[in-house]
Image (cartoon, rainbow, N blue to C red; front, side, top):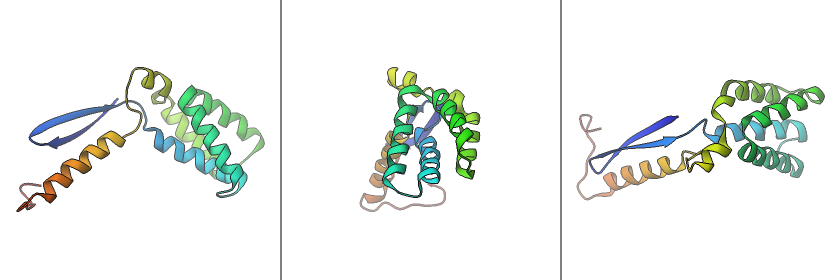
Length: 134
């Protein structure tokens, strides 16, 4: 579990983000699909979407097994990189369980909160940033 920490309105907030953030894993899957079906084709988009859905619904173990099977018939740098990434992070990719428990699997809520906190700080009348106050 990772904690993203940010300060807002004099309150320290801890937002748990469980597991590996799914966006990074999906980037690897998109690269694999583009390597197999050519960059940005309809087939690569369908393949990428299917793999990403499988990741979200079944978790990293199932996708890693599928990548191994895919490597028997295809060979590419992108596929090898995805396999290594999934091998290194599969223990943090139990997305179905995380979502069932109500945990965030993306960093979007943290990023949004940071944007609002920083935006509010910068948009107030007379607000200035100093090195000491940064």
